[in-house]
Amino acid sequence: MMTDPVDLSATCGPLRLKSPILAASGCFAYGQQFANFTDLRQLGGLSTKGISPLPRHGNPLPRICETASGMLNSIGLENVGVEAFLRDKLPFLRDLGISVWVNFFGTDFDTYVECARALSAGQGVDALEMNISCPNIKKGGIEFGTVPEVAHRLTRACVEASRVPIVVKLTPNVSDIVAMADAVKQAGAIGVSLINTITGMAIDVRTRRPRLANITGGLSGPAVHPIAVKLVHDVHRAVAKATTTPIVGIGGVLRWEDAAEFILAGATAVEMGTALFADPRSALKVVRGLDAWVRSQGVASITDLVGAVKLE
Image (cartoon, rainbow, N blue to C red; front, side, top):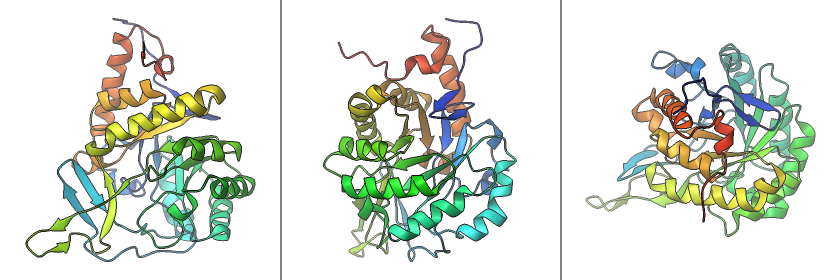
């Protein structure tokens, strides 16, 4: 085992992260809510709640429920809107000294572009994470995330409108995620984050009613992790490996071993979400575990292990 310091920094296109671990969109809200529970400055970065041009109240209650291996949510992208985010939320984030990614969405083509243009002008925004994959809203989101040609046009327009790099968040609810990743890469996205939640449903057998008011929601947590690892691997082999496209792995990371799986499959960075609800400090525990793992592998940098799964 190596005793010299190891390099845990991660590179996502032009972005440099102090570690490969970020808080996933929606799970750390705007950061302030968790400041008393964990040291946010030790994260590699934070992806905010999804921001839309105007404030949203989200879906009716109940909109979250536990499952055997994770949770279902149908929050409906409740958020304060662009103006309030830039005025009230961004100053706190930019003072943390970590990479600030602003997740965003619109309800149609024009509002996506409008949102990208406005948010990218905010001082301290390092990247935009474009959400074309949310299953919990009636308009936008997943409507743009299932057809490669549509995703390409939307990504191109947002990239041209933005002053900062764009990473596109992809849904697993498609027949060919490789085609989706290639489409947004060709349109100018610096990378992709995958996966978003998988559409699911839960029923209260006593009342015979859905456990979510929206009926369906997005499944996250350990149940989706093997699926996410497989899709990261697929995109890395087919798209990222040949074009050095950064991949951010998302889905069911509870322990450092889960993050390490994503890295070996081809992810350059990893977002943690559901685990943070149970233990806000879990991200920092994962970082410490990755440090020990890199040492045990006899390499100087975690980047040496990206896509290093042994298939033969």
